[in-house]
Length: 354
Picture 1 (cartoon, rainbow, N blue to C red):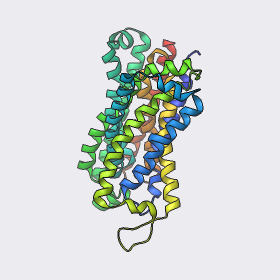
Picture 2 (picture 1 turned 180 degrees about the horizontal axis):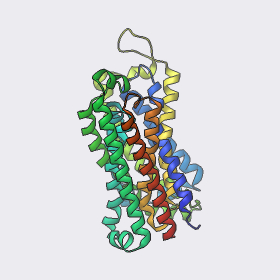
Picture 3 (picture 1 turned 45 degrees about the horizontal axis):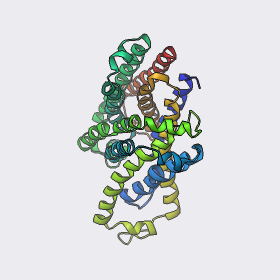
Picture 4 (picture 1 turned 135 degrees about the vertical axis):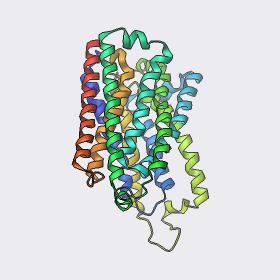
């Protein structure tokens, strides 16, 4: 199949929308501790959804997975474990900084590491990015993405600097800039490991294709392994918190005090929806990457830019920017415009490279 970068950009936008939206259902969860709803959603995103959709789109998925070399499977899972630390920090960042500022800081670092390290490790950075017109255009798109992230983050810092403590808490109930910034930096670096896991899983794509999987779906079996690694990290941490807080009974409707019982059906449905949306960012990511040709690593930049675009829109929808000065709101829209422009530039560079 001939690569279609324009279609790839659309898939990455869909993945960005799914990622930026995944935390929204969690806001509706009531009287469940963080570790309970995070692990509940995670079972959907790290275990159920990856294997379900891979099985639906990959002929003889068990046969394909049985042929994966142990060292390839091990690397995919290892990078998934490291990415899991980033995922933990990502969820905490949303709690402490809100959607807009939190995503900007996390994804800025994630963009740099996740995009540039794979070609640097392969030794193809100079040849692929610097040695061709299309590569230099894609590099320009990366620079535009980083500039857009900086502008959005700067606007977020200005907005938070203008607010009173009460206003900050009204927008983000657990707002804590210093704690959130530290967690966001750690999360951004570790989250880039997902891109390394996908790169390590390249041989699995060939096995899936040989089994009859279509070009759009060959990346789905790799997601099963990388996301299983994420389940290991998150599962262990949540288990520690559950034991420490004695919160396991919340799954059955128990409360830690004499307060109201949690709405079980709604909490399970909302957590399942959040987890499935989290998975769908990578479902669409693998589809988008399949359309980017030899510059497949640029998919990570497109993915990060799309997440911030839609994350910022959600931030406005939840009135995180309602008390910001007009100049600050104009600044954040300028950052979003840069990010949208960057996705167009990167898509154009990939079309030239085709």
